Image (tube, rainbow, N blue to C red):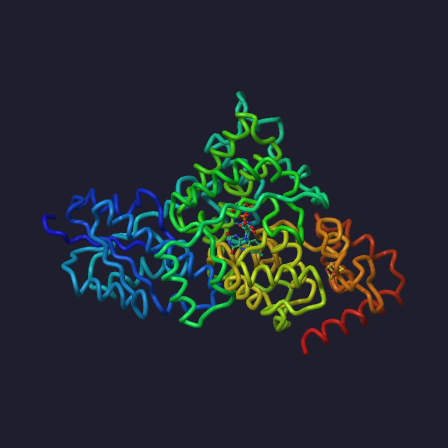
Length: 510
Ligand code: FAD
Ligand code: SF4
């Protein structure tokens, strides 16, 4: 090819370094014959009433990425269009393009569209190169996976550690003799602890412009005010360095702790950047390992962090592609209660839920245990409709994308997939929240009470759930012991719990 006739379409959540579609196009036609196209699609932006801080992050990061490509000498056609298809069609009409190269989308629908319909829509040959944002693009621990079969995250994780040589000793076994130090990740936060805040970044001119546009569009939840996330690779790397130096050492011990004083506790707050391609998961895991090797962070922290990044994150993406599209409609517990209205403003007397929901709606972030053991735990106990819960998570968070939300919410959080992703339903009463947080101190309910005006809804609904699903849970290999407590309940008390729970749930539906 001798004319500038290859277009490379770079998606907004694929802001990776050394983009493989660009590399492919350059090999095909030479760098001087390659043109980049990026599209801000109005219909995509309005698919859900997204978190406004997420819209600012995504659009600002895209515009910065385009500016960096231009600075490297690329011609970039950056467009705003009613839809992705319309934007690409306008691009193809306005320039001479013989072929389009793109990287496989992270989400199922987008990937199918690229493979099955894009070439016809553009009237051009389209090459879709493999996605490099995940390690599963390079290595599949279970290449012959069977539909309907259960796969365990722990086996997946060990295979990833072995394949990528992460945190291994000289014999090829796990550093320190154990693969998983989860038991050392469960301390509550001491009252006096003040974890260092994550690195923040003042908005520059591009970000301020995007903030004004998102504000003016009047679309989404939360506010643009207070936006302080990284929007370039250099900033995301600075945020990662800050985490590794200041919070990684305590990440392990307090991984499950929740606090009204700090949303992030010692967590990394790096998911928004990993999910946009501004950080690369293997490089990040290797940096964490280097901190351990240099004696800057203990093994329980480093192993815990690597387990999240190359274990859970990759496993979730792997399960998503294996189980979609059926996963999106899963509802194994047959739950149909609508989402209470207070999910959209946090106006509830339950202090834990009030704190976490307001945090999510205002800032777009809560850490993992709050997503799992407060929000999803409540949704599962209260029988909330899984699709509505999934929609809420897609909307509220700055790091939300379908590939990560749907398996986490429907699989891990609500066990709506019948246990294909997580080996047991994550259920807990108010006592767990009391042990792992300071929320119960400021609540009008009592975490240990399951009956009466001060009964904690988590505790009442927990026992109600055990009673309602006793037979299924009793036969569950990992849940049996929790159900044993039911044998201590007299029939009259069971009835009282049922009645209390029914009253709470009917009030919630009003
Ligand atoms: P850290 O605790 O510092 O962990 C480090 C990294 O590990 C994270 O940045 C993330 O990239 C990865 N990670 C850890 N656990 C998971 C997991 N279960 N799935 C995928 N990646 C993981 N993650 C998202 O990126 N976007 C979401 O929208 C999202 N929604 C979730 C909804 C529910 C119901 C649950 C249970 C989990 C969800 N997660 C989601 C996973 C996890 O909660 C977040 O990745 C994590 O809280 C992000 O905060 P952090 O960067 O401080 O994480
Ligand atoms: Fe949440 Fe119950 Fe504790 Fe109140 S008492 S904060 S509702 S767990």
